[in-house]
Every structure is written in structure tokens, then in C-alpha cells.
Length: 112
Image (cartoon, rainbow, N blue to C red):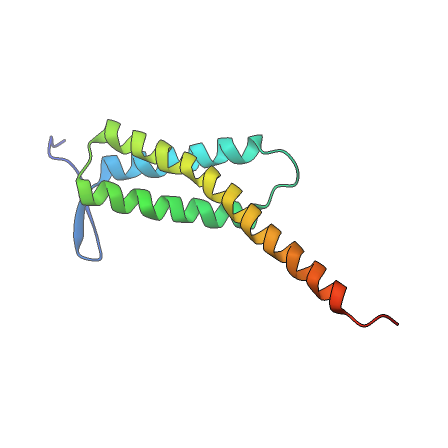
């Protein structure tokens, strides 16, 4: 066994494997907890897209700042939690506009 940290390479960039695994698991666990506590019909496609975005941001942040395990875990939890705000914003913005567009269309449709 070696005391040297394991270093992975992705697209030519080195990063320590431990913090990367911790931040990815922190995002996944946080997003699952938030997703499972959501009321109403679960929108898994939207939640999956937000989780993927949170994972990407977290991985890039941890790699860019060379964070240790604790900081990587806290970063993963924080960015994963911020995904709940993104989902709320996306639902309100998209659903509000879609409803307004349908109402406008139905209001201008010729009556038979």
C-alpha cells in the first residue's frame, strides 16, 4: 500500500480521486433525499437533469479548487441542495409561461 493519493486523469486534467468520489456521492445523496421528500407527482426527467447539472458544477468546482475530503463533501451537499431551488424556479417559470401561452391560444382560437 502506498501513502500517495490516488490521482485520476480526465481529459488531460489530474485530480485526487477521494474528494471527487465524496463530492459526487454527496450530490447524489442530497438530491435523492430532496427528490423523495417532494410532494405531488415526481418529475424525474427534470430532477435527473438538475442532478446532472449539480454533479457537473460540483466536479468542476472541486477539481478547480483542489478541495480536500471535508470541503468536497460540503460543496457537494451545498450544490446538491441548490438544485432544489433550480427545480422550483424551472417549474414556476416554465409552467407559468406554458399556462399563459395555452390560455392566450385558447382565447384567440375561433369558436365553432
